Length: 297
Image: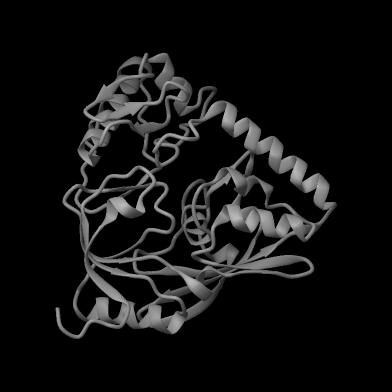
């Protein structure tokens, strides 16, 4: 396509950028390093009627085997910065949460330790109000900078509609920065808490397997999604190259060149069994990209 903004590539396999390792090609891939470049890409996408998606570190993401017929974005450079201040931090939307946890902890700022259990970027964490160990992004977020084809604006956290694994951000709106309020504390104590969280995660979740993280949201009530799935005997259940983890039933592993269709088949069967046995309808936490249909139960 003629008139492409600088920095956009064509026909790029998404499997290279996802932690599960599945997915077909993106029609266009842009990796902007500053807001002006991102806004130019978004404006081009609007003019040419391209759908838009942001993939962050490729965690919590299941792209269709047919790919994505639009513009896929990964934020780099200044858009992935980590700036630490005396009572908080400003993180670019593309900033790695793991790297941010280390940096703010070394600076003696507490309150963000829970994010060590969230694989992904700050922008994705704001969009879905990610959380772990009883804490969520909404607990530390002050403001977010949102970019669209129309430009950039700063929004108070209270105006983002942040609830459990949800925000009111529209599909064409991208988080390019987030301001966090944190609390001064002893760096050694912060590191110890992070080690505790990481140890709990290692003990409970598959760490070296190719996954996209948790598959389903917890439905509320006494049992988590993982416990419901395990009670249905789904640990180790396999379709093609995808398998429900033996370690934690709310994870799907790519064990042998899985396709996204294999993963969807597992998700569909898991939802069916939980609904049949417990009368509970599970809703997926993983974000889908492209033409993926997960049948109702």
